[in-house]
Amino acid sequence: MKRLLIALMISLASAGLAFADSPLKVTVAVLKGPTGIGMVRLFDRAPDLGSGVTADFSIVPSPDAMIAKLIKGEADFATLPTDLAAKLYAKKVGYALLAVVGDNVLYLVTDDARAASPKDLAGKEVYLTGQGATPEYALKYLLSKSTIDPTSVTFNYSMQAPEIAQSMIAGRVHYSVLPEPFVTLALRGSKTLRIAFDVHSEWVKAGNPESFPMSCVVVKKDMLERNPAVVSAFARAYADSIAWVKANPTDAGALVEKYDFGMKAPVAAEAIPRCGFVFVPAADAKPSVLGFLTVFFGFSPDTLGKLPDDGFFARF
Image 1 (cartoon, rainbow, N blue to C red):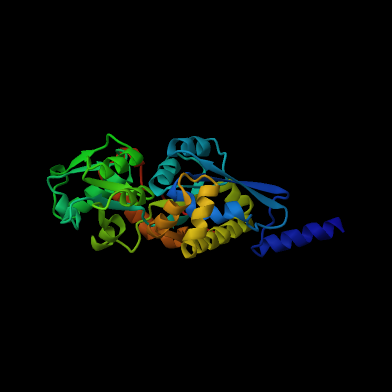
Image 2: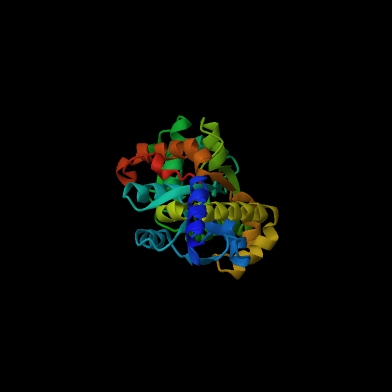
């Protein structure tokens, strides 16, 4: 009987089927804030990942903390900015991109009623959240595509997003590239503030694919190799969660507050439609991801290291 069972398992494996390690607990690390909100329903309803497989979800407070966790191999799946995932891959940290999960959360917020495009920022001071990150490189790229010399714009990195939003409400800051949910917080706090443009739309206008793949979910390569059926089940569950969040922003907002993603329910509900949640498997996302990373590489090749090879894109 034992020999028959072994023979059956070998036969099934050769047919492309795989057995999950059982019992198996997979660990999922979600970056606090909008990056991981698309996964919030899985916090509330455990995904079906197969017999004997359970999932443990945790919220990570910052990108630096996420980097430390992934370097130690402490998560099987994790959400993070796409450029950060590529940097870790270049350093041979053992993760691959499973899917793009966020197209855009960046908007140019201003109290200038005339501003409508990147070219209208010439001669202005624009506040950005962090130097050497997506907001800076994206805006510099869009300025160059608008025939505006990026050096004609003053970039101010002196404040983080919460402080920028409050300063805009107080009228001390007039132009900023803000991510959600701070866009919503700023707009709720002032009747004079408005969205002049969103980075995703301007990215497409500049001739890029219909995607601005800001955030992604990665998978530990060992998990992908040993438990491909579990990886596929997790991908389906995550895609379903994103679809539910987009269709039910009020209910999703309540879960965002319940599980402490960093914002109150009404703010999350209002922000969700502007968060650009998608689920694009790695194979389909590859062209847009490489185009996105090429822009980063052009501005700062030292920080990215090199463009990722095919091993960066998980097959599942």
